[in-house]
Image 1 (cartoon, rainbow over the protein chains, first blue to last red):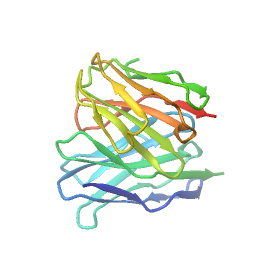
Image 2 (spheres, one colour):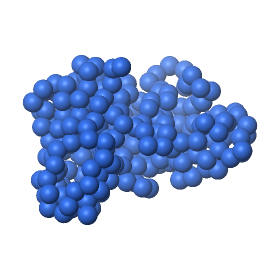
Image 3 (cartoon, rainbow over the protein chains, first blue to last red):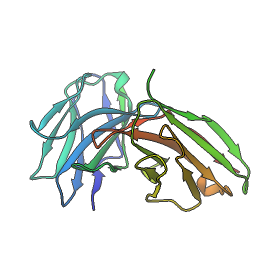
Image 4 (tube, helix red, strand yellow):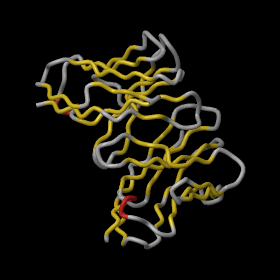
Length: 113
Length: 111
C-alpha cells in the first residue's frame, strides 16, 4: 500500500523569499510522484511529475521538485515566490504502471507582501 | 476547451434528499474518479471507474453510488443525504498513471 505525508499543513512566507514544501511517501513498488496546485475555489491542476529519468523535475512557473529514493521524499521548492503562488499544494503518488493516485493532506502556502 | 465539466457547482440539500452529480470529460480518458475534499483531510477517493460499464469502490464509498453508462460520463449519486456528506466533490479523469485532469468541483451542503 502507498501513502503520502505532507509535513506542513501551512507555510507562510514573504514575497520573493524561497520556499520548500515537504513531502514523504511510502511504497513497496516503483512509484510515480506528482505535485498538484489548487487555487481558491478551483479544482486541482497538475504542477509537475516525476515518472523516471532525471530526479529533478521543473514546472513552467519556476517550481521544482527532486525525487530522493533513499529518503523517500519529493519536496517542492521555489527560489523566489510571488503573491500569485498563494494556493494549496498537494503531493501525490501512484504505482508505476497503475492508475490510482493517493493524495497527501495538502500544504497551504501563504505568500505575504 | 477540453477538460472535465462538473454540474452543478453548488447545491444545498435537506437531510434525506437525493441527488446526482454529473461529470463529463471530452478527452476520451478511460479512467474516471470521484473524490471528496474536506478540510485537513486532503482528497479521499469515493468510487472510480476503469472503463465504460465498470465501477469500483474507493476509500469512502458508503452512502454513494456511481454509474458509467457512457465512457465520457461518470455520475455520483447520493440516495439519502446526510450532514456528514457536506463536502466539496471533485471528479477527475486520466488515460493512464501520468496525471489527472480535475473538474472545478461541486460544493454540497446538507442541512
